[in-house]
Image (tube, rainbow, N blue to C red; front, side, top):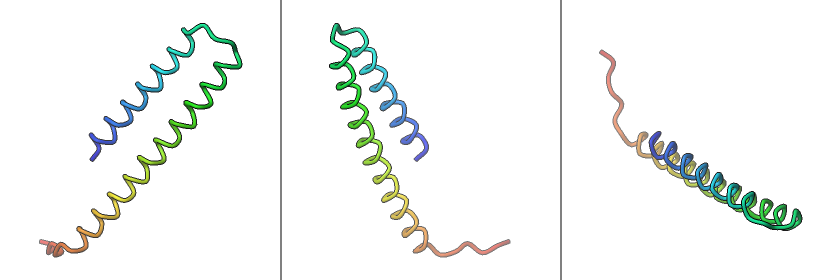
Length: 75
């Protein structure tokens, strides 16, 4: 689970860095660049929220499965 989270974070971070580099290296007006940054930030926010919702749902499912398992006896 930690590897999945780490991998997804790296993927999102890399995508954002690539998008930022493309914005800064493309000849556009300041207004166009600001609009693109705003649009990218909104999309990134949506993707992060969707990912967090998925992780929360996965945790709920794992917790439910764990409750079904018999408890281990202490030695």
